[in-house]
Structures are given as C-alpha cells and as structure tokens.
Image 1: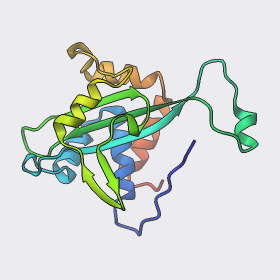
Image 2: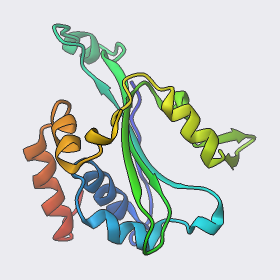
Image 3: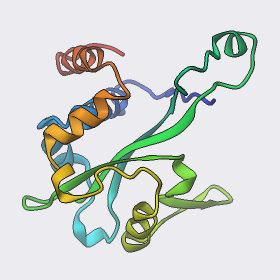
Image 4: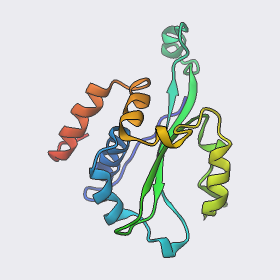
Amino acid sequence: GENAALNIPNGKGKSTMFLAILAMLLHDKVLRSLQQRFFAPKSSGHYTHIRIQVQIPIPGANDDLVTISGGEIGGKPMVFGMYGYSGENERFELYAYHGGFEDCPVASVHNLHHTLIADDAFLGQLKSCPGLFPGNAKERTKRAWLAFVDDFFDMSSIKQQFVYQQLKGAE
C-alpha cells in the first residue's frame, strides 16, 4: 500500500537501479556486470542486496473501487531479490518469498543509523520465509526463475522496459 519515489540528481544511479531491478526479474546477463561494478567485495563481510516489494493481487478480489476511493491496496506483499558479492568467481543468488521486507531484513535502523544484518543471519531468516523460491537446486535455473516471475509480472512489458533502459531511455 505504499509507493516509493526517487528524487535524485542526474547521474546518481536512478537508471542503474531500475536496470538492476529489471535485470533481476529477467535473470539477464547484465546482472554480472552490475555485480562487478556495484556490489561490495567479500572482504566487506556483508552481501549487497537488490530487492523490491510488490503487492500481489488476491485472485477473485476486485479492490479497484476501494483503492480509487483512498482505501488500502489489496493483495499480499511479496519480495523479489538478489544478493551476492563482487568478484570474478562470486555468484549472486535470486530469491522470492511471500511477505514483506520486515520478514527478512537486510539492515536494522535506529535513529537513522543503519546497521547491516550479518550474512548468516540474513540467510537463516530467508530460509524461514513462506513460499521461498527457489526452494531446491532444480529451481535455481534461469528457466525456473523466469517461469516463476512470469506468474506475477507481465514479462513482455518487463522485457520492453529492459530494452528501453539498455538504450539509455528515461524511466
């Protein structure tokens, strides 16, 4: 039920963030170059994370009128994300789960001070998230990821936006 807006000066990463989100959803090879350029090294001790939280409509529920009249957006929250380190031989991992950011935090915030969650604590929390995908090695393929994401997003629209971003289009 909440939205986010980026009000950042030109050249500070808005397009790169959007490209990273689209590449994550498409499991595109662009992720490797983004990982090498922007992810923290393993020596940092903390994964770099890219993730989004979306509202997934509940089948059969029609909340359009409620939303238009200022009510809560219907549906259930779901998180799609990736984590990893930079480095030539480092892998990144994609994941999705039913729930919100608070169900598997990557940082704690106190008085505007952010403290990153330890990698092992993040992984332990992630494993306990409901509906975690991938749930096994067989689901860790690009084909399985794309089939899973296709259940929640209009993939042709995602692909179109991705191509547009790669051509240095504006959001």
